[in-house]
Length: 308
Ligand code: NAD
Ligand code: MLT
Image 1 (tube, rainbow, N blue to C red):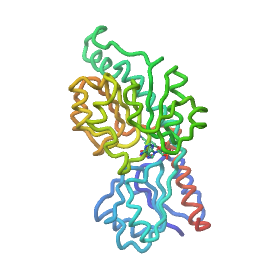
Image 2 (cartoon, helix red, strand yellow; image 1 turned 90 degrees about the vertical axis):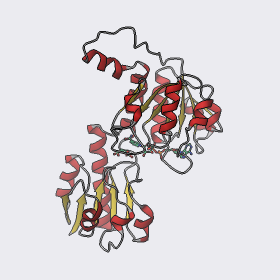
Image 3 (cartoon, protein in one colour; image 1 turned 180 degrees about the horizontal axis):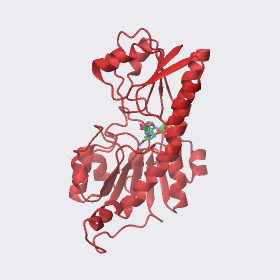
Image 4 (cartoon, rainbow, N blue to C red; image 1 turned 90 degrees about the horizontal axis):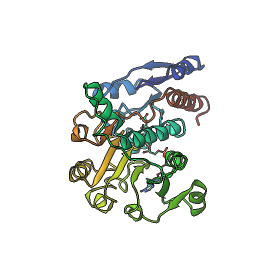
């Protein structure tokens, strides 16, 4: 019997699939960290997680049993892959299951930010019928800059085209032909689009190159009033620079689904006007969660039945 530990809540369909899989037994143990996580991991052959648990080197060190970790989602940045590799633990992810939901959430934030939906709603709930304060901005004929044109970035580009936006984009792996097909004006450097764009959205992993990609110096070069959206990873935008950019009026708005520190209920951005934040909900749809759970479980079933 291969024993699987489920470390974050996953869709019931995934648990049902685990229960039906021959040669597999599972336990759900969520909210683990520190010594409790380390000793729990030592009792299992495989693990499934989302982004809630942090499987750092300390949690894995000395583990002689664990063989595979499946991440129900894209980013494996909550898993220490160097230590996992050294210990012979395979780390797998499910990169496609939440693409559409995250692209849709990006567009939700872009539109809601443009029309100040959250602030207007809060004011109305507070008993004030205010039709003057929340003047918005139409997105048609505006220009969206996209950094990172992989799965999610490309889906965002398609939706922007449907909303009659112009799209500029930067990705080192995007060819001119692909860009043309997607209706994207490709640039050679991220900064080349700064003076032209009304909106900027990032869809890259967090790497040394993308950390603080948008800092105070970059914000200085943006078109005044530019609105920034991040549904990728906290830290691609420097959060202190966002606060300064909003205070100075250089930025027209900021919408974040992801933060440097998560969970986060204390960011100064949460108290600022022209800001819209959600608690890492990009992939939180029934459809995406069902799909990533099923894919992650299938990866472990395959691994423990065939070793691949
Ligand atoms: P992907 O791998 O398909 O695309 C990432 C793209 O970024 C690639 O095309 C790559 O070439 C490009 N890239 C890498 N470094 C770059 C750089 N320095 N400059 C420009 N482009 C660069 O990944 P994806 O599935 O589209 O996911 C994108 C991001 O969204 C990831 O960080 C992922 O973890 C995150 N994500 C967040 C949520 C959420 O809930 N908010 C959900 C899913 C994915
Ligand atoms: C991902 O990388 O897949 C997302 O951040 C969504 C999640 O954490 O489930």
